[in-house]
Each structure stands twice: as C-alpha cells, then as structure tokens.
Image 1 (tube, rainbow, N blue to C red):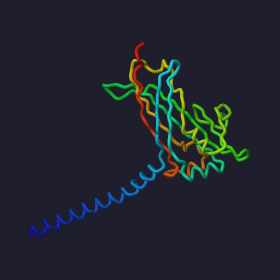
Image 2 (cartoon, rainbow, N blue to C red):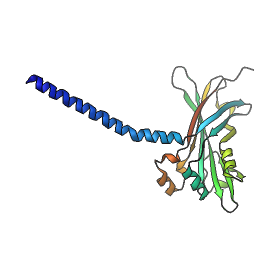
Image 3 (cartoon, rainbow, N blue to C red):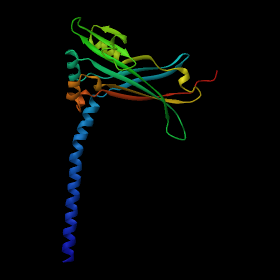
Image 4 (tube, helix red, strand yellow):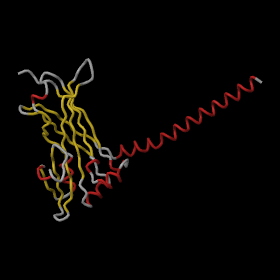
Length: 214
C-alpha cells in the first residue's frame, strides 16, 4: 500500500512539473516574438566619437536605421516625428559605480510640408513645441532620404563645457538615440502604445580619456 501511494505521489509531482514547464514555455512565446519584432526595428550606432576641444566637449555619431512603414506613412500624412539623442557623462570610479556628472539632449523634428513638397528638420536642445519651433535651427530637403541622412548624422554636437568635466579623470559617455513617441499628437500616442513597429532605439558607449599633459 505504501508503494502504491508513493507511485501516485511521484506521478502527480511529474505531471505538475510538466505543467509548470509548459506554462513557462507558452508565457515566453509572446516575449520572444516581441523581442524579435523590437530587434527588427531597432537602430544601430555605426560610429561614435567624443572629443575634447579647446572650447567644448563634442560628440559625433553616425546612425543606421530604416523607417518602419507605419512611421513613414504617418510622415507622408503630415504627422511630424521627433527624434531624441541623449549623452550621459559618467566619471569612472574604480571603487564604486561610475558617477553621472552631466547630461545633454538633442531634439530633432522631422516633418513633411505638403504645400512645398519638401521635408524639413528642426534641431534644438530641448523639446520642440509650436511656440519654440521658430527658435530651432532648421534645414529643408527635397526628399525624405536626404532629410533622414541628416537625422542619422550628428556632427560636433557640443555636450559640455571643458570646465564641466575633470580633465585629469577618465569619463564614459553613454549615447542613446530614439524615436520619441511622447511628443507625438495625443491620438497617435494612444494608438502606437506597445507596437514594436514604432520602436527606433540605439545605444552605445564611448570612453573619454584624461587630457594629455601639456
């Protein structure tokens, strides 16, 4: 009788364990699918360079990404897109986590102008709103490809003053680039929430060595 109960308990335990494994596998499928979709629309940082110059610390980067069809379709319908580049500067510390010493942002607004059939990008250090649009730097292009090429290229972006960073210390600069869904019109924000097709994101790290002794 004892052997019978032991076999029953063992079988029940095996069935329970198998059920848990199946549930875990099924639960992981949506996450795997979402990860694959997210990876398919993510961007890449092909080049990243942070330099010390006499009057500034500058960052240059080259990005690689394609606009997902829903994003391009919205652009052609007159919905502007906003891209944000972020640079976080950390002072390296051997005894603890690196300490963030400053952050900088670069906002780019990309929009189609139906009347002129041209594309325009506006660049500013903060969020670009209707009231601040006239204060942002702007460029016009004949094609979306030309405008996107300008969005993907960041040249000599000033992220700090020389005095903001200790010249004798090594620093790590974390660069991030993304399509900012929070700046889309409210109806679009609700509609694209959780959709991987709207994910454009890239990140990379660059070391800024101490300044060479004069």
